[in-house]
Structures are given as structure tokens and as C-alpha cells.
Amino acid sequence: MIDLYFWTTDNGYKARHGMEESGLPHTLKPVNIRAKEQFAPDYLKISPGHKIPALVDHDGPGGKAISLCESGAILKYLGQKAGNGLYPEDPVARIKVDQWLFYGSATFTTLAQQFGLWVIRSAEDVPQAKKHYDAVLRDMLGILDRHLGEHEYMADDFSVADISIFSDVHTHGVKDIGLDPYPNLRRWHDAIAARPAVVRAWGPY
Image (tube, rainbow, N blue to C red; front, side, top):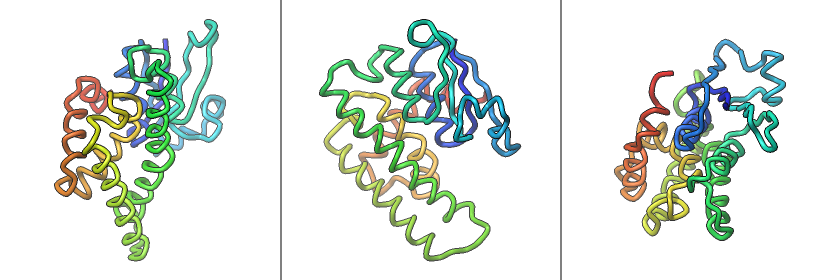
């Protein structure tokens, strides 16, 4: 059994989506970051950087319990453990998945979060920051759209690479920017949004 510690953030939804796609038995453990629950001493033992998501797999490698944080690492772990194609066995296919998994985890979400902070949530109006991060997000959406004009999914077959990118496209691309200028990205988004695992992952808990 896996315990998944999450909250309703882009990275939290990534992990929950990956868990649902994996089909692995799990229990959701909400960590209310608004109430600072991520700083609880017991949680810091699981996620030293006091971030969500995190997981504890009570049946990890060798049958031993392990803990893991960072959404990209979690998605890769779940994909490997599930063995259902989310993280492929073929070495060449893995290289392609890793490229876009790391892009989604390290670049796209990081900058999309800055867009969310400065353009959407900041109590202080900073026009230069708004202009900068609006342009950055639009550029990244364009990168994804061009790539998806030649590929059905980020690494050709649906994988953890797509999961790593979907939540911020869904949150900021659809709701804040709009996907009309990005028809290939819209096609990709809508196909993923219709997956039963996504419906469950973005539902109540």
C-alpha cells in the first residue's frame, strides 16, 4: 500500500494523476499547506524540503518501506512500479520520456508557478513581472504546441511525461491564457482530460 501526501496544487494533482494512472493501491493523505501542515515534524521526515507531494510505499524495493518526495521522482517511481507503460521499458523510449518529464517538472511547472504568483495571485501589482511571466508562459505553450503538432503525446505514447505537464496546462493554459492559439496543445489537453484517471484525480478526496 502507498500513502500519497498531497494538496490541491499543480504538483499535488500531478502525483494524484500519476497514482490513478498507475492502478496501484493507495491511500490519500491530505497535507493542508494553508494550515502549514507541511512543517509538521513527522512530515518533514518524509519530505525534508517541506513540499508536497510525497509518498510512503510500505512495499518498496526489496519489500522495505521507502519515502519519496519531488513530483518528477514520484511520477517516475510510480511508472516503473506499475509496469503498465507509463514509464517504458525500452531505453530509447525512456530517454524521450525523461526529457519531457524533466522539462515538465523542472522548467514548465517552475515558471508556470511564477506566472500564477505574479499574474494571478500577487496582492502587489508589479507590471514588469506580469509582462515577463505572461510572455514566458505563452512561449512555453508555443513550444508544447509545436512539438505536439508532430507527436500525439509528448514522448509519442502516453506516459509520465504527459502527466508532468498536464496540470499546469489545465490550470494556467486553459483557464488563464486560453488554448485557442495552440490547437495541437488543445487536442492533447482534451484527450488527457477525458481519461478516467484524470477525472478521478481532479475529483473530491
